[in-house]
Amino acid sequence: MASGGISLYNVQIKRLAGHDDVQLPQKMSAWASGYDLYAAVQEPVTLQPGERALIPTGFSLAMPPELEAQIRPRSGLALKHGITALNSPGTIDADYRGEVKVLLINHGTEPFTIERNERIAQMVFQIVPQVELLHVEQLSDTERGAGGFGHTGTK
Ligand SMILES: O=c1ccn([C@H]2C[C@H](O)[C@@H](COP(=O)(O)OP(=O)(O)OP(=O)(O)O)O2)c(=O)[nH]1
Ligand SMILES: [Mg+2]
Image (cartoon, rainbow, N blue to C red; front, top):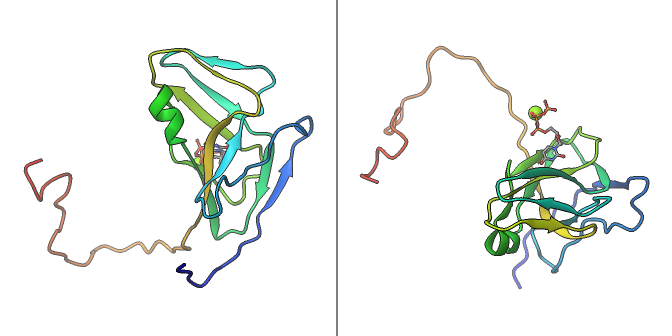
């Protein structure tokens, strides 16, 4: 199998009080991009079509400043039930120490109930390049210039 140079980042995870029974994020296959996230709802939450809710996960993180975590939908829930993350991809900042939460919305046509310990989304860690914004009066020229929003085709 191909394998490149591997960088390993340490990310601390803290289980929050009252959630000993809730699974911590888990990769469901060896090379999965995402860690599946489990709902830490006290009671089942039913989302009616068009309804949204902020779903707790029962954990907090501390990661190095060069990382972020993205909260992404699970495609199976989206395909079968129209359940997705409204703000996808959700951004977990490296300096955020609060509970990771998932903003789910029901885009389907049927009510959908989220049970405790149900897998609701996935979390992907990403490297965030450190950037310094330089304020200038003139930007460099390019062939594209200001063309965008489909200017290269008819559709
Ligand atoms: O799906 C999400 C998105 C955000 N957050 C938490 C972690 C993140 O670091 C913080 C702020 O998120 P964001 O910057 O997207 O929200 P904002 O509306 O800009 O809030 P703030 O003013 O607190 O930055 O909220 C979550 O737990 N889940
Ligand atoms: Mg913000």
